[in-house]
Length: 375
Ligand code: SIN
Ligand code: CO
Image (cartoon, rainbow, N blue to C red; front, side):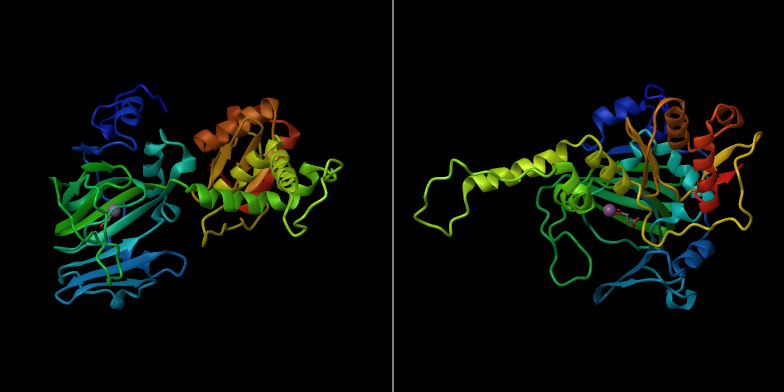
């Protein structure tokens, strides 16, 4: 994507300007981010998705006696009637189930894929919402249908109401009120307080970008590199020829702790292990994702274009390509080809013409797994 091309999606800013001025910093309201937008999923289809075992959904009702929250899947008759006000249904990961929604996400690829979480659709009846809250996500709130009134605040007081099933800010003090109609969009950085209330029936698409937490990354990566750690650190024995006699024999020698730290540093210094674990982790398919292998075993043929399945996650670094939790070392022309596939999510006939035997056989195995399709 051209970083210096002004986009109506970003109110005429270029991706570079948006990232510098707004990303992780301050909200941006975009009127007519996508003009003439037609909702991609109707109410009935969204409700059908929420009935699906493999789809994460929540129903939130704001009644006189307070907030209630239930987790899906929901049979249609388990949802309140559309004529009843003050309820909302949130359906996560809809981009995994619908080509048009997946295609919409592609417009946001000026942000690295590694940060993208998913597209959530919320349906709300008049007065419906999830209450004032903050998210740890960067989020683009795109109004797909109807109107929603957003009130936002950069307040520091993030204390929560106790005893409710949702994270609701106890002392919400809105500073700005914005009414979004179809095609409008609001970007909010993490930690920015907001409350969106439907004015009449409405649907909002939230494009969420997750920021991994350091502790979570450390745990995940250490688990992944644990198995190969012994090889990477090598068969080096602790030596303590300079050890003095001790008066406190139960004390752990500081030199042994230093030796342990050196062992970990040796593992981290391995050129391959950490980047590989990172790429495998980042491209791990979401829970509930499974791929449908095609019935007949396809092979990469001349004259054919290839596209990644919408559920496939593919990334690369300088030495590897990663796809759905697997990693491959790649160099030279094959690496260029695979990076193009990851970046553009497709390969044209021309791209494939120069592919090596190895690359073709890898692509064929991904076709067989249903990670890739002929186009
Ligand atoms: C909603 O769409 O109702 C909630 C989205 C959000 O506030 O993050
Ligand atoms: Co939110």
